[in-house]
Length: 92
Image (cartoon, rainbow, N blue to C red):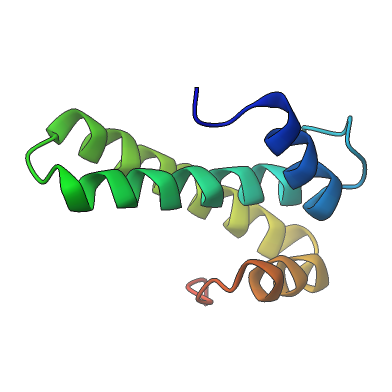
């Protein structure tokens, strides 16, 4: 698999509350962002891989939903994760 235990632990340690806190919203958004970047690179090489394209769209929707939740719950945490991951602010 392209994402091992060490890489996941590093993502959650950097963006989550702790290495073992894999359910935090910030950690999940960071993990989804990593996976989205990986799938985008794959689709640049394989333009006709429609199952990956569908998976990418679903993953972007999940990340957007988590960001909308974070926006409603705590806007400061939302702004911090947007800045840390260099994402566009799409929720108005």
